[in-house]
Length: 249
Image (cartoon, rainbow, N blue to C red; front, side, top):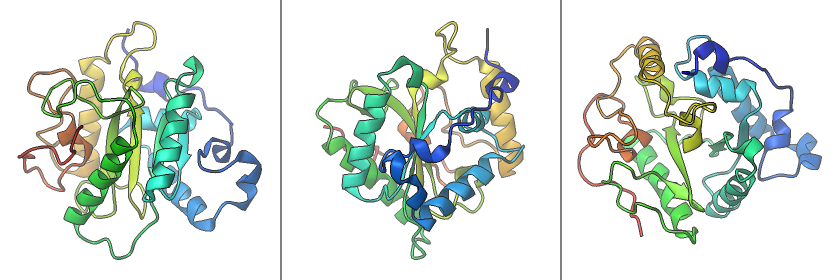
């Protein structure tokens, strides 16, 4: 049975979001930097919009199925929080949790090309800190996905340099959303989410962005699909060409 948008939006969880920050102990949550609270508030307000395209992201936030990390532009912070995220995901109760990694807003970030460079730099730094090889290792393989500690996850790059593609802006700074591959399967049947659900999301993206869905948006495992092209989209519908900026070991 396919997962419906209504089912995904149900079961609101009251767990404080501050208890799920991976780079600070919960006991210190009362002393969070104001910038962290501002970043989360902007992100939450965006996902709370009724017309926000990804109802899976909306549901994860409302049900308390999100972890958070801040100062993600710092390699040491990114590595430490990713290790914690992967370790926590070994618990079956947390296997479908995602991670929102916030970077400190930078007023000097105005170029979309620079945003893309920073996004891929963070992923490369994480990969270099990972002891487990990616399988498959070649991003040109339709089954390739970013992984850490052997755990595959789809990565959504969002940033303030998007002007047209509003669905890729969730705050004033860069935010990387790490979604485990389990999230894209029906929890009851273990099968990939249905084509009908994907069509609904694409229709919502069309309405929200007021532009067609990018031509590189595809489905995992499709021989014509390349996951990496969907991670950090252009701000127009120009197809992504060339090799993946991610240098896999």
